[in-house]
Image 1 (cartoon, rainbow, N blue to C red):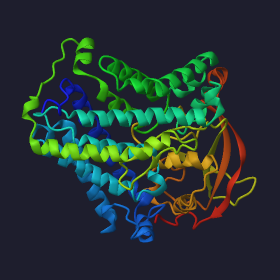
Image 2 (cartoon, one colour; image 1 turned 180 degrees about the vertical axis):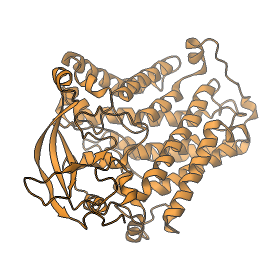
Image 3 (cartoon, rainbow, N blue to C red; image 1 turned 90 degrees about the horizontal axis):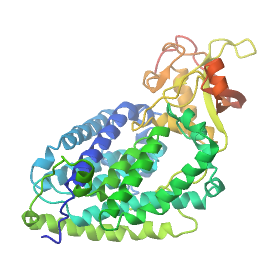
Image 4 (tube, helix red, strand yellow; image 1 turned 45 degrees about the horizontal axis):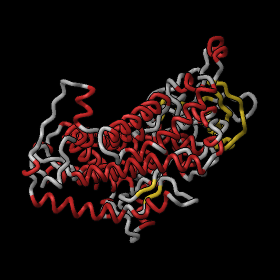
Length: 480
């Protein structure tokens, strides 16, 4: 079985198994906290309505059998428990089939959630997590060496993720080609973090160097992941460093953290020992690999090769797809981000009042957890946690349509408790306002002088009305 096993990659396996499981844990906890308000029986886009509409279309999900908010919670908490056990390494200490069963279990549960998540789960990192979790199922347990074919499959995943993102940028917005993308990106990205203001104000020549470095990391470095050691480990280190740069400068849910974990598939134990000489890794006997495990892995390898064809063709297409799945199991995917960069930031601000609409009405603003609102509030760090409503509000500011938004306004008019828990601040203290409206503001980062003088991180100007005042039941109307 020496041909089957990859000796010297125990570090990679431990990072992949425990790290991917940790991201699943975050994803399940996010679903437990947000899914019912967004997609539950009385959510903004109710899952039961969606399930009735897609019945018979072959979308894999447990919820075809039954959906209720209680069952949804049972599913996500079961997934969270198993993911936590994998983080602790409990299944990995057993026979080879135990971590396989555990990973396939959480993959199947999360697939069931994603496939009814509609626009709130329409992000590329959902497919990335599903594909990574499926591959992690075949890394084996602590008493067998990691299969070389599975490690190569992970490298192919990282290659598609990085190279696809690089191509989509070059084929998309000219600001990536003329190296000016970061003149705008830190200010207009979906959810800036505490360091984004400072990154935005770096010298413009440095921004151009950053873009050039990004092109090198995404269009050149991924090829070296397939080279012999130590070249592959060096390429992985470049990916890790550039992804940490993105972690420092923005909130992109678990995309960057998961990419860092996946890049570790190319890091050998010897490379780790070269940096940390005292680190030791267990060395499973390649001859101890069970024949049944080898058969399963070889079958999966054939499937991975078959699934590779569609995303490979996509990479060479002029009309390259971004964040697309080529099968309903999310196991054959195309990735990419920010093929276009917005030059200005528009934010939708929701306000309520108990006064009759007019020039003398006192409108109070609802505050979201992550998206910009109060100009005096410094952006916060939330990634790798995913604030789904805040992300959809960013798309709304870009002009995207949202069937969920009128429902959100109605929920706020009714002071729906579950909806209000998605927000940072309800200016009416749990009571229903009489009127509600949605305004559009143009936001920009303050200058250093404005920050010192006025203590504001943002400067905003009114840019119009998205929704005219809508009347509700008024104070005391009660939560739904």
